Length: 218
Ligand code: DX5
Ligand code: ZN
Image (cartoon, rainbow, N blue to C red; front, side, top):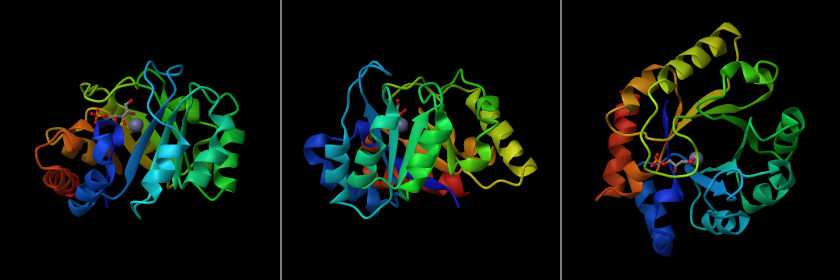
């Protein structure tokens, strides 16, 4: 089973509840929330206050992607706001093991994010402790960027490693996902597909989600 996670970054925040409902009608599985602080990435979005508001308008799992400095200081706030999945960047979380434990102890699924230039082997010691790995297929910060092709082989290698070690973490991809590339990424072993502009900049949001979902599960 493959899951589609529309990213709110490209949604119309003046009509957020309605936009989420439309994505749900199209078959969205998860709602992806991009938290940016203007320090870890050169853009600012929103914090736990908005995640809590989103929590009130949908029953779908909320996937909170933390692109912030010192993520360990904000885990409780996002868990309380209603996050079901929280991911922190390998490049920023210095004490990765303790952050992961903090997330899991709050009953939230814990993930680690790898930027395009960060190799998979940085997760060697922690792979068996995490619920999911998020592979960035653009440099984080903005929606609407083009997919970095080498991400497909990264997914393949990670998927192979998962099999070899008999682990069952999920593999998620984020950045530049569209109807032209989703099938090959699914074939490489990816489970969760984040899509921002392809969903929320489409004329028909529901149809865009349905199309991605069908292609990923083909
Ligand atoms: C980028 C964010 C993504 C973003 C993806 O830093 O992490 O989640 O919303 O947007 P698209 O799908 O437009 O590349
Ligand atoms: Zn994201």
